[in-house]
Length: 329
Ligand code: PBG
Image (cartoon, rainbow, N blue to C red; front, side):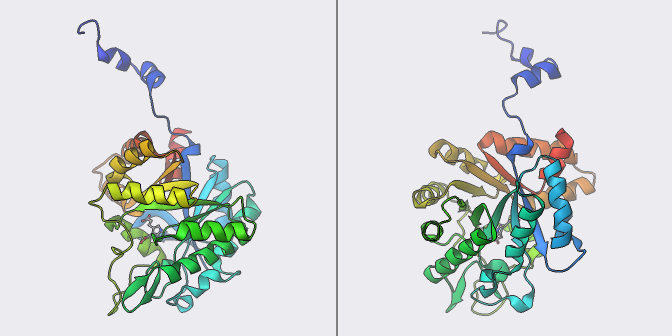
């Protein structure tokens, strides 16, 4: 009791604070999202994501080497698909020589040790900007799942270490796991976007890939029939437990900061690694506030990343990964 216990003793100076600090950020915490485009010599800044770029494959090589040098050893690949290759079924997603398949090979070629995860969902390939096939104004589940399983196989064949289904269809983890096992890809992992909320924070990402749901008659204008209602908590646990039962190696909560209550709850509930995706809108908010001089970029960035890890994240997918690692090294 006071004054025998004075909590401020453990905060007296930086040496004691760092000695008793509970949450330490290192390069090993991060998964780096990367946007890939067709073409040559392209390093194109995304308007709503300052200092974040789309790379053509030739310039992706240098970026991969830079990440590796910084100690960042895992990437999550997304592709921007030309409009003329988009259709309702995402046919291009299965092209063995498609952009994603070439991107995987490019990364593995320049840096064999780099862990490659790939986004699995139809939206960048869909003429309607949806994660599944549209029929009669609905996103259909089971036919979409069949394509997701084939897409996963195609990524595994190209050399992906993990596939990361971000679509939120029911039953896709089991279908993907079975497809991988049947073809002998027993070591290809699945990081499931298991508790993915229908969030307005994905806006800048959809700018980056030009993948927003199309404003077309008879096409749902949002993703609320498959991504989760942000008012729900128990549903996140149910989704996550089902994905683990179906074979997910890593589960995910997405977005990050607004959902740290869910992260903690899931971390307490499950015994597989939990990933958290600090999404595009979270990145853009801080960049914008910092550009205006309203927030201290680096200080707020570290506070946010540390909060995500403190909440229970074993893996953090973040557009700040490089900024953080440069700052702490
Ligand atoms: C695609 C996908 C999205 C994100 C990751 N994978 C967008 C969406 O679901 O609409 C969002 C990532 C971000 O905002 O940074 N299914």
